[in-house]
Image 1 (cartoon, one colour):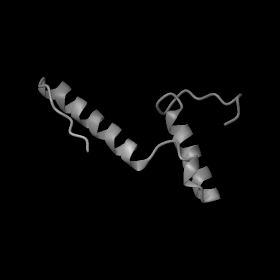
Image 2 (cartoon, helix red, strand yellow):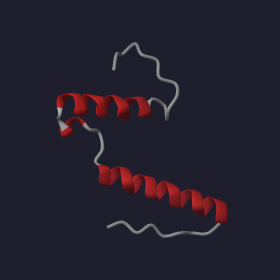
Image 3 (cartoon, helix red, strand yellow):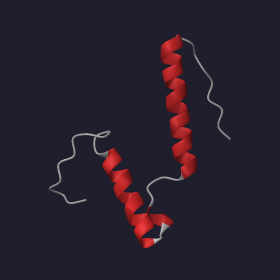
Length: 66
């Protein structure tokens, strides 16, 4: 990403960074260029979904990760 690029949307530029890394990894056929594993992405989404459920219900919820 160019240093002069202004990122002010999409999770503070995180969406742009993830998309950029993915395009580079696919284009170069190099998974080492990915900034996150699918397992880490799935875990972080699960935590976010459970946090939202907790917020809506007012209940404390467990998150079970393997």
